[in-house]
Image 1 (cartoon, helix red, strand yellow):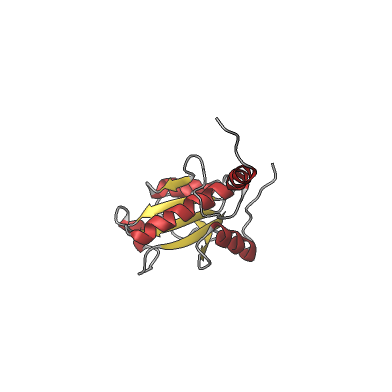
Image 2 (cartoon, rainbow, N blue to C red; image 1 turned 90 degrees about the vertical axis):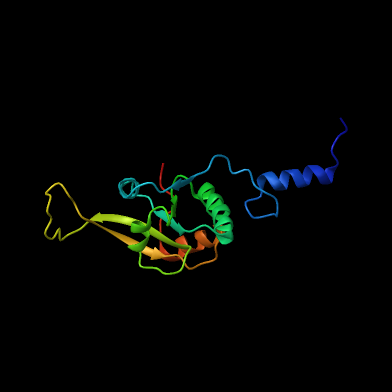
Amino acid sequence: MEEQSFFDRMITHLRSSCKYYTGYPKDLGPSRVIHFSSEREFVQLLHQGRPVVVAFTIRGNYTKHLDKVLEEAAAEFYPNVKFMRVECPKYPGFCITRQKKEYPFIEIFHSPEQAVNQGRVADPNITRYSVKVLPFNYDLSAYGFREFFKRHGVQTSYPK
């Protein structure tokens, strides 16, 4: 086998080490995007105390692009920020509660706290929580998520 030229070695190194999009597919490893399966699982994810980015989607060409962006962002921010995808036709009840008419859309859930006023609760074992929810309206890219988190003070790195 012949030796690679300097240019080929340089391009190979750039493709493997560059954090920014270079036009080539990145090897992101296993998927870090969690697929929504129940509200209980979602609440357990919130209780971990990490921000959760939720993409509410329907099938379509734009959703394919969104999936790639979510995969890249999830790989970059793992394990400090969790990314979840909800297929709204499968789970309409969860999506309808968000009261949005246009799909796909993204919301960021963070800082869960036990609600001060528990109100009237039928079951004493139920505890109410309040969660901050921010609509995501930045550039749909890993860079856009980074800037959004910085702007809104969402903590994306934690001490070890």
